[in-house]
Length: 158
Image (cartoon, rainbow, N blue to C red; front, side, top):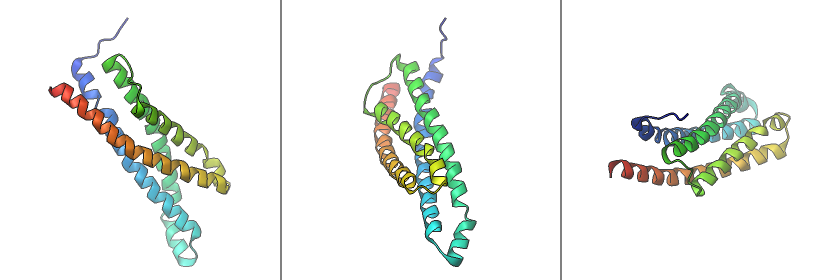
């Protein structure tokens, strides 16, 4: 038994993944800002530290990180599913491979949380390194993703 998906849904579904990923790129930059504020809070003293603590940057960073992890995994799977539904195959290339790698990076980064909460510096530095790499790859994915979107639009319009 096969399910026939209406053509209009197939066409418009192709834009969900890029839209979600652009939102995630923005959230990733915000998570970076929060992480920097956590580091500032940890290093601050006196009234400055008290003021920074009121910002609850650690709570916000943890919450945004959880949302990023969930949406990154779902966005990756969704992008692959939509590609398969529309083309009957996945396109094995750098965009797919880097996207899968990014999903692994964010999962590994998130898994370091219990160690960071116990004060392990190796976990903090690894977390930072993984997320800087993730952000760099995310920027590259945004460019290659827009190239893919452009090809899809040309196919639809053309």
